[in-house]
Image (cartoon, rainbow, N blue to C red; front, side):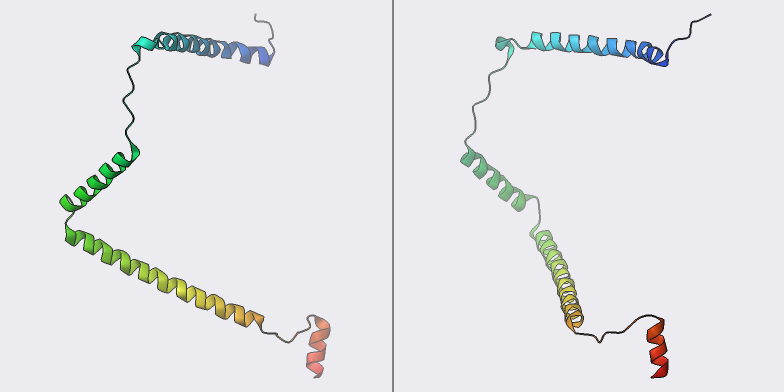
Length: 127
């Protein structure tokens, strides 16, 4: 018959194989990284590219792509659709702004005070 073991000990015994696998993985990773760290094995870094040249090359490439791959009619169509959508959004924002201004003006007006409760109802019935 098995002796009664505390639950913490049983949990620790169940986790032991997992901990051993993690320690073995760390050992193998360190050994692999140490083998790769030889300076002679690393390739020489390419010379840095000057920023203005890269920027000019990128802008030239973008211009060439725009000229070659996208027809001008598609660009005009896209521009017209974007302009129309932005116009609709602007109209909606103007409408919301007008509504907010009107609501602020209405809320700024002074409304006569009303009393609330049974006493107020009794006075209304008398008057």
